[in-house]
Amino acid sequence: MALGTEQQRQLIRFLAEVAEARYPGSVKSASGLPADDIEFSLAHGGGLGLVWADPAREDQPWFLRFTAGVATAIPAGRHTDVLHWVNARNLALNTGAYLCLVHRETGEVSVIFSSNQLGTLFALGNAAARDWFVAQLITIAEVSGPDGHECTARFGGRSFQPAEHGLLLALSLAR
Image 1 (cartoon, one colour):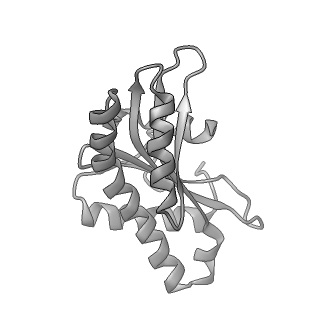
Image 2: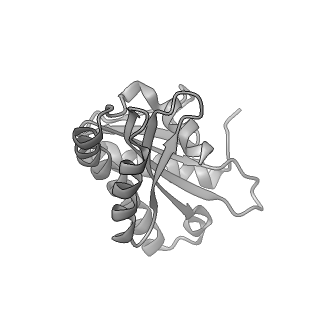
C-alpha cells in the first residue's frame, strides 16, 4: 500500500525528478520504499538532504519537510561554539532554520537545516508554490555540502554520509 495522499506522491515524484535532472545520480529512496512514496534523500556535494511529506489524509493540510544534514559527531563540549555559528547563520535567513542538536548521552552535536512548507499549496496548481518548493530543494542540496565542510573544519565531527538518511530523519523528527 502506498503511503500518503496522491497529491503528496505527485509532489515528491516531481521534486525527485527535478533533483535527478539537476544533480544526476543523487536521488535515492530514503527508506527503501518505492520511489512513488512520500520521501527521498539527495546526496550532493559531500552533503545529504532529505525531502519528505507528513503522512496525511486527503482532507487534511500537510507539510512538506526539507532537511539538510550539515554535520554530525561534533565532539562533546563544542555545543556553545556550534550554537553561536548556528545563530549567526539563522540571522541571515528568510525561511527555514539551522538547528543544533546535542545527544543526551554522549554530548555529541549534530547540525541540520530544516524548512517546513505547507504542501497543500501544491494542490492549488500554483506555479509560484511549485517554484518555491523547487527553491527549497535547491537550498538543501547546496547547503548541506559547503556548510558541512565549514562546520566540520571549525568544530570537528564529520559530514552526513549518503547511507545516513535514517539518522537525518530521526534528527529532523527529534527537534
